[in-house]
Image 1 (tube, rainbow, N blue to C red):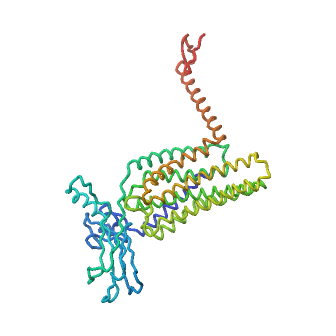
Image 2 (cartoon, rainbow, N blue to C red):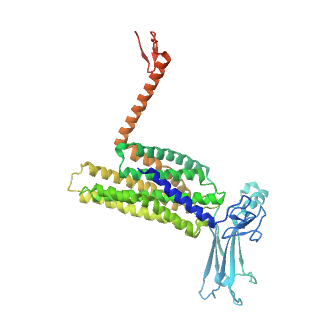
Image 3 (cartoon, rainbow, N blue to C red):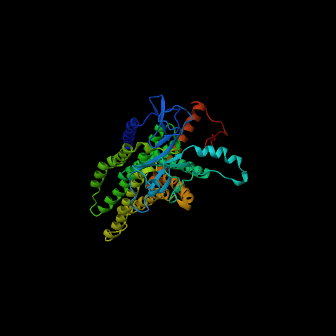
Length: 470
């Protein structure tokens, strides 16, 4: 089954992030969020952040690093109604060019947009506590400020548009659904992987694909449960985010290989050329299944290592469209697999219409195609729902995402194990062997207690409620 071949991919990932962390500074225990240690003596804010005091190097333990975006404008505002957009931590500002560069301005002009990471917590803890409790007022966004270069008039010809990102509150019900659901999914994925490994009757190329898909999902869900909230130290959070990126991409890549295997199987049904399919899949599945995700993560980590890990989650940053380094391949795999499965059903319906539909090979391929298509929608629709968590329906989509995501492992175990006749027979065989072994063990224990020369007296009752008389 080549199960241990997952380890080289993970080892490559860890070595990759070991190299990446050389580019980022070592985190210090006394440095604030979004800051790194320099020479084990001072702290400095990460790229895209500035200290509240304005100092580049600092040692004050209560210092904060605020997100900032600056823009140097050299345009002469020749375009009518031209505006500039600045984004910081999902907050944005739109300002007209004529308000930045005025008629008497010479040389370039600068504009800055700053988001204060901790000021909102201070305001909520002090200012609003003094107000009437009946008002239930609280600050639900970060505090921002903007500045235009020196010697600018305070009057603006047009209004400046500020867009705030609401602070997301933790939903306890959603958290419970996520953790309970993923725990059940982990158990089902473990049982499925053990079944694929130990059940000799079903071991083939398809089972090998199911096994590695289950292993990737198992490790991804396990790491999500234990590491998604470990935002400190930052280096560890970046490694967790990169590992999750790799494992989830690997799971979707193995799902793509399942679709390819199904398509090749259906296409070669008329010539019964199964040996060539198996040779091809064994040759490509491990380099593709674990190599392609590793290359994707390597490129992403090398280009933007600071975007692995956010302030509250060890996942990919939304800034600069970095999340598409995951969603892009997922959408592509989902689309390709959907096309492959449509072709499989078309081949089974059109090309094989002249053959007996009761042929076992055709029936098995048709059932496998149906299961794989359902699996595609279970895994693919999960992340599609994640994309739709915007607007008024965001809360509903979040609940659907949590529920369906937790059903992935259960679905794989149900479809490929519990609903398989071969696996059912193997389960019954294992159950009988366990019962037989337990019965023999109890009989041996009872015999040992009685001794070799002792005889049971009338009325003795043994395990199983069997009364023995002489």
